[in-house]
Image (cartoon, rainbow, N blue to C red; front, side):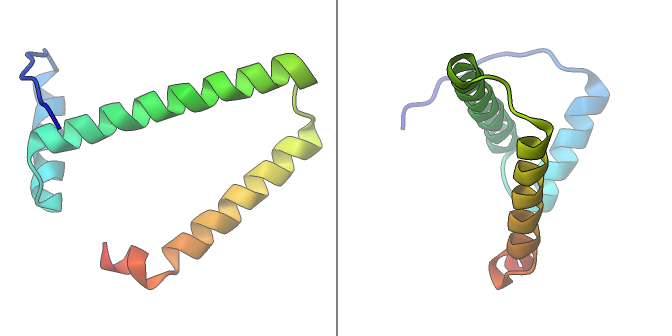
Length: 88
């Protein structure tokens, strides 16, 4: 994968917190920041898909939202109880 060096300006306390988090994870600061940027882009793409679906089918009902939240909570609980999650 090609990389490009860029310069960004962040609050000093944020940089310190990010550097500490990267150190805890044993990864370079740039990898931590890139991961955060990638997550943001995935969230934006997901929101766009939801908006497109709702434009075609209508907004989600409170019942649909509750069911989705329950499904997400169950998936989180399953992941957090798995050996893979505890090894991470």
